[in-house]
Length: 261
Image 1 (spheres, helix red, strand yellow):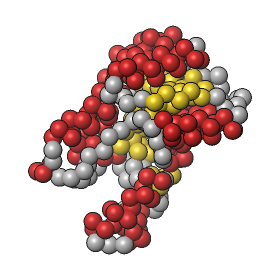
Image 2 (cartoon, helix red, strand yellow):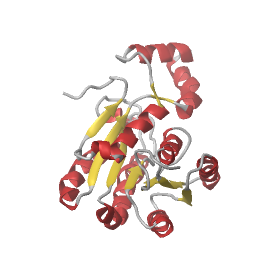
Image 3 (cartoon, helix red, strand yellow):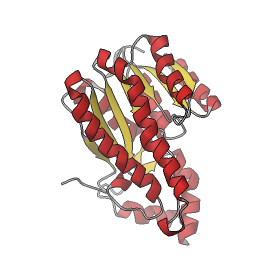
């Protein structure tokens, strides 16, 4: 693909799964980037790579568990070896937690921290020499749950809150070398993952899926969920030169569920 906001750039995306991760990869390619795809599921990565190729784009699929050093190295160094540069890193890999604190297995919360925060930090460390060379950027995908309490996802939200602070910390440390670090905090996303578990969410509440959707959207100023594509578009903006003067920013992509003062 030629032209676009990310023309001739190489973008690494971790967590390329159904929903946002896939949309991120496809939008990066649509905007002219060569995309390095990272996720644990090799078959799914191949599907996304085939989608990109069929649309005229170029990608490299690298099976990657971000908690494994050899996998992280394969993702970053494999991408650099293939394309000769790295211009952007999107940390989209995540591990969810469920249940209230009182009954929680805190080892599960620690495991979420290893993926959601430290997995991202370790990828950034590996990519940093290449990002300094290209004057590139990092986008950390986070959640509105770091601003609006959700009792059922404490470990996930806490690990993403740590990532938010890391975004600001690294922006301050790396700005002088030309590397930007920003974050996008997502709310409800109307895509495949949400649709797949909406029935279960509603059942836990003892209501119908339509009742749950109506309740949740009524609380949003836009009165609808953002789509996966719309959320991916916010990340594309942060990767592109349209945000060249932004670093340390945490933008909210949640239909107005949370509005930063």
